[in-house]
Image (cartoon, rainbow, N blue to C red; front, side, top):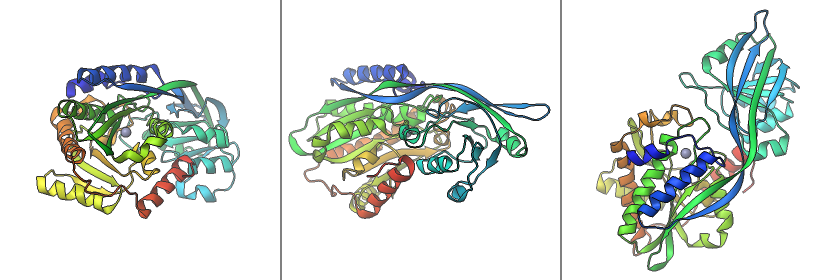
Length: 404
Ligand SMILES: [Zn+2]
């Protein structure tokens, strides 16, 4: 598995040529397992990561490198700046033309407030010990509220900014934004039973600047293992395996999929989502976006087989969420840990991953896939209960500004 991961662990942002290259590699891998996959294209607004700097305009100017936040545009401006606590954003007085410093990624709710107070720009300070990454805004932020240029700065540089807050700041950001073509790659293995299909997925794209080994090259190679197994051992129920594109740009691949396949979603009994794996210092988890009986099924199987799986019932910020909107429950197999905490950064590379850790979660996912795909009757209901659907609604509202 590690050898396959090595082939795809390179930066591959949704809608770019690199993402397309990863889909070509994955399609070859699927074919090598005896299945002919289908590639479905969709348009995305995307970007090529750019460069930026901010300069404290003191007598002797002090310059810091920053990473422009994707889809937030370019900038060349002088402004005052100040730190605003995220929980205080809704109460902040207007500060037109200022740059706002924040300690966390900007959600739809944050962005709405930045627009309300007239911020000219914003700077997100990275956590200590992490190299600054290049995350991006969701495409509808700017279309709803206009462009507010943003950047990520390292923690130490952030400290220096804050201690000089009486000075003006010059912010200069350059980045390319364009409409690109992203893809979903789907492989289907037909079973003899017409109802109760199993949908397995893993996103194939990475965050800008990141080799995306743990997040989510690992999930892709885990899924290839499942495809290999079921190609040789046909399941009783039909199984779909989907590599999603542009998850990191805002779950765009799974959105394109559910929109295009609306009429077929009724047939899907459960989603197995493989997102984040392979961490050497990791711990295997199953997050159940579904009813208690699904969590009970997973946990009792975990106990019977001594899998060492941590089972919780909650939402998971990944492609499973669009299926939850259509009442389809999911088991999200993830491996959290020290290396996984470097996800979305340039340090999410092969150093944090080994064969044993990749296999540990792949084998667990395979076992659940075998049991479910061959079940005479499903041991759980296809249902999203009220407490989870409320969380799903809140998630899409606050992070994406989407009504569900
Ligand atoms: Zn991911």
